[in-house]
Image (cartoon, rainbow, N blue to C red; front, side, top):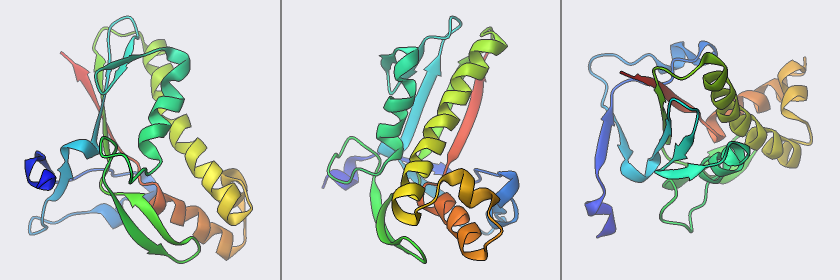
Length: 174
């Protein structure tokens, strides 16, 4: 019953990362990707660089740990993104977030320095969870997998993109 009360968001295209461009090309006949409201993470940053995540004011030094709460799958907590179980070549069967979309709204008058600091923290949170998973499950750091010339380790690096997908959009508030 709870499932029926959630608002659906329809996203036609997202995440055209350079490393994944061709995989994400969607044609006109494609079904839209449905994002449940709880899988839509909203970050708001005002002109002074104050950050709110899901409407809650977050001090600058707590942005990374707060984001990691949403990026690490947590199926027991219904206020966190919805999860599904998936099978991976190297990681096996694990729980992953289902279609998590992070949307950051930045004030248009925010200084570039503040914008850059906050944007970097968003990417640091993503890389930290990928690194922690890689170290625990593959015995190598994210950086070691990325630069490795071993096929298996390269495949593990790219598998992390599927385990922890990063669908991120930015909006500059008018």
